[in-house]
Length: 375
Image: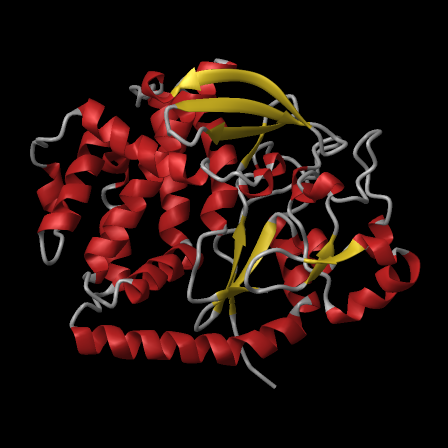
């Protein structure tokens, strides 16, 4: 038996409700666990498929291979097999992340987190962890070994900083992380300095806002460049519609597409990439973004994704460079998406606009590669 403690700090004091007609979670193709397969094999054999990608697993089929789960009713968006829905369906918007310990994180792409209503998130999370005990017990020893190896390699390379100190420095400078010029300077330092000192990013930046906007746009466009619509990020809008944005092969035009309940896609509009630029944030927008930076800074999965990148880059970057660079890139991504949504939906750059951009972004953030595991 594996003993473990669970960090519930991300869910404590929060609520999460399931909004009627949303269906956002039904766009996430869930894995079907071994103990769940018998029901689907017996009753819905054609709805059980192999997932895409290198690490294939049994999953539920999607409408037209890119829409919602085949079990989502088109009238009212209700699950046809609700009593037999998979463990991963039951968990959303909670994510159980296993590193060298266990932490429960919330998916801010779920609108039910933003309403302030619904069941107590801590109570819900504890129930889900109890249900996932066997999966956690299986994954934890493996994850601990991966983390042990990472720490060993990073120390040998001389790039293993103190993650607690780095996180504390972010917490002490949250308001700076809503300033695009500060973020630009931080990215410059991550490229130029062997070890970033956050105080250096408070100096005057030589990069222009236009250059920074182009750099931020390139990051977002990478996620919008897939020819496979299934791989495009989805924005669940305020009217609960499902929206996709796809850049053309020249990287110059973004097309706005609407994904309907049948898995069919409809054209809604175009915008030249050059027209989407970082915009000044309103004070209430800064506050929402500041709170989200604090969420990212506290996530173990975010730290695990930084470790993943360090490993992929053969331990060439110091932890401070990788961490600050990743966080700055994430925040600029949110700001640029806010500008994109404002163009099509008029959401602005205040609290509403930044909230919508986070809803558009956070599922992508949680999908980022990491050396740990979600169970």
